[in-house]
Image: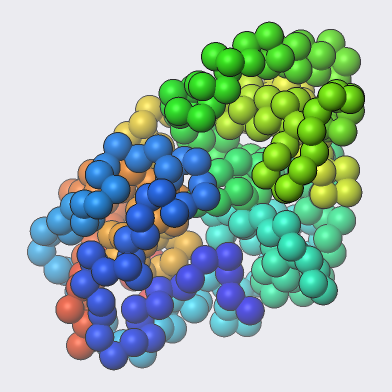
Length: 322
């Protein structure tokens, strides 16, 4: 079973598609992730040009495939600890695990974690979120469980959410409601949307959320509330200071620091990645500059894969361990 993102589909094709094709560049309006929706790029523009650093190393295609599989922990030779510690290690290695609301046998994120950690049980993830506070929920390229250690790198993203059109419009039109929802949680403790009883709220199709639920989502997107736990599969919200452990660095990273961190995360997770993949994995709008910085510092290198046209990139440490 694959991790919650496509592991380098180009490595398994005879010819790499140009970066401007629909495979690599989905129109921004089609993306459900509000982080990706609020890009500063044109919705119709192709990706910016790939960094032009000189290629340092050529890899045979078979080696590139093995490297990709090994880096993602899918080679059956990547040990993890038992119990919840092993689950934490998997989330940290992958960078995040995308949350899936649909369950046939189990939800997809449970399948992903079990595939990387055969001793995994679904209650482990709930405890890591609600009790141990080793993971938290926010937007990566989609809603995801994220290592708590990465919290500071998501703060710039949360700050920009105040300017998202839907969020700012809702706050403007429902200023009193948003304040009441926040204050009630501040005084009464963690609450889910079901704890807010609005008898006049119309409940229709799945996107017709009642106003309190929408207010909770807005406060979550801006980082003023966090998911403290899951009740069934319903989010329970609380203040960040009651969710983030005291030892976690809560000083917001700069936008450049965050972009560099997410670029490094993408390369660490995928092993080998193109610029569009580095950008897409975390909806990282600063990916190109971040990649340039990593290349300039020698922390990453450009790689030419045998018989492939487009350049790929890897962390220097990853290639040194090949």
